[in-house]
Length: 442
Ligand SMILES: CC(=O)SCCNC(=O)CCNC(=O)[C@H](O)C(C)(C)COP(=O)(O)OP(=O)(O)OC[C@H]1O[C@@H](n2cnc3c(N)ncnc32)[C@H](O)[C@@H]1OP(=O)(O)O
Ligand SMILES: O=C([O-])CC(=O)C(=O)O
Image (spheres, protein in one colour):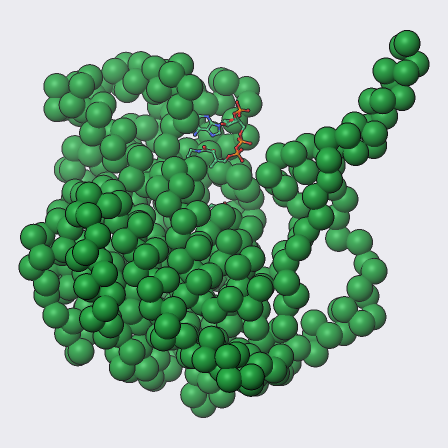
């Protein structure tokens, strides 16, 4: 059965479940909302639905019900590879099923047909100032390709129908997923390798071809596979996934939605934290420990100085997680096997010991443990990607796997335009009884 046929079958079943919930159980309460949640970034409010992934605060992410070790173990791998095919993760997130080798090959072939980057995108990128941040180039490249959208064409032609809208969305999702690694590598080679481009190799899988286009030898192909698979999704409330969902809820196509999401990923409290971690470690080694691995005391002092200056410790803390991020642990395991003697990995490992007790001692940080961003940059650095402002582009390629799968399902299930209600401070005060208390005092 083709991917599209499989999805059609799954969508049919899922529509029945959603329709029943809405028709018969629409009034069932799922949450209550407090003032601190309304003011505090809607933290913890259960107000979105997705089956692509679920984040448990203690356990971490499950992709379609599978933990990270299960995903890395169960998804098909090419002979000799340490990490599974990225295409397998995309298939799993789209369909909910672990693909066979044949399913993976079919999807890989489908993506290969679609990966050419339009020439006008390259022209546009080359016309932009070279000191433009790579995330700006990446988001601009994505939105520039909006003219390719099959969903936009279908809508424009007056064909919109809730039953079929997922089909052109799937076409767009496949097109965009195929082009993102090419776009990312193009930006890298243009900005940091003096416009020396390496053509895509049609015989390679997504991770292998990305390493090829970046110009980095093995095992960078496995690094790319691991990186994209781990960053694929983090349920729906994180800034990038939520932005894409919100924008797409207005029936904007995946190009508009995903470029908007990249604006959120580019923020230092979200995806850009992986760039910040490496920048911060470089600053520490350059200014505080004479280019060497710092002592524990030097490290503690640097962490305390960072906090005293009002900054956060990048790569630590999380809005939902309350334990060490399993994406951090998976990358740490890889680093223990491949980067054992790397001095920056030594600093990253020392930070894992030094930072949590200091953050805990502040008494306000809900999660003192490292998140994914604390570990990902050092692996890139080790294999020669030392231009840390590029790291969030890598995150953006990986995150598309989950976000695009979600957008296909958003259209398949006909989710409504997102439009939460805002209230005024006066109203909050009134519900809190503050005006009454003031009157009583008078
Ligand atoms: C892929 C990802 O997006 S993972 C997250 C990547 N971001 C980072 O690593 C940046 C550093 N971390 C942070 O800034 C935060 O932990 C966030 C943004 C990830 C989560 O924020 P929140 O959910 O608001 O965290 P939390 O409820 O624990 O915050 C409570 C207080 O602790 C502080 N805090 C949280 N994490 C840290 C940290 N790493 N360093 C210093 N202070 C922190 C918050 O700034 C807040 O202080 P305030 O009350 O003075 O404003
Ligand atoms: O879940 C979040 O809020 C942030 C995060 O770790 C991610 O998006 O990968």
